[in-house]
Length: 158
Image (tube, rainbow, N blue to C red; front, side, top):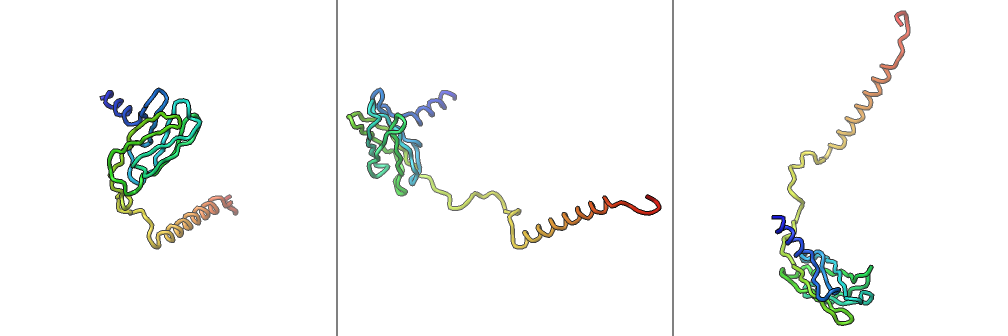
């Protein structure tokens, strides 16, 4: 079982390597249409130059720019994109290439919040006023008991 989990993790987040230092990865590599994804790549020893990523999942080229030793960029999967697997192709300035796959999912988005109960504690008209009056009454009783409890008795029995 542990081996299957490890294999799943390695196949879902591993970048696609073309040469020793040329790779491209998309995070997340499975995304709903309309989602923004991040792209990270390496172009051998040319990570100080821009590179281009193309995919039918994005609808147009994405320019990756140098960022802390890697090439990075972002793209949005169009909202109407059909579900399926789409190749993501990296083209480096000096010629190396790499490819990975982005899976576009077909999941319905919820139209309203989750059904978490009947809302018995939700406020209604008059509830705020009732709580305010109750709070004032409790504070008034506490002050009254404090006043009468601390009052000194005067007279023959004290």
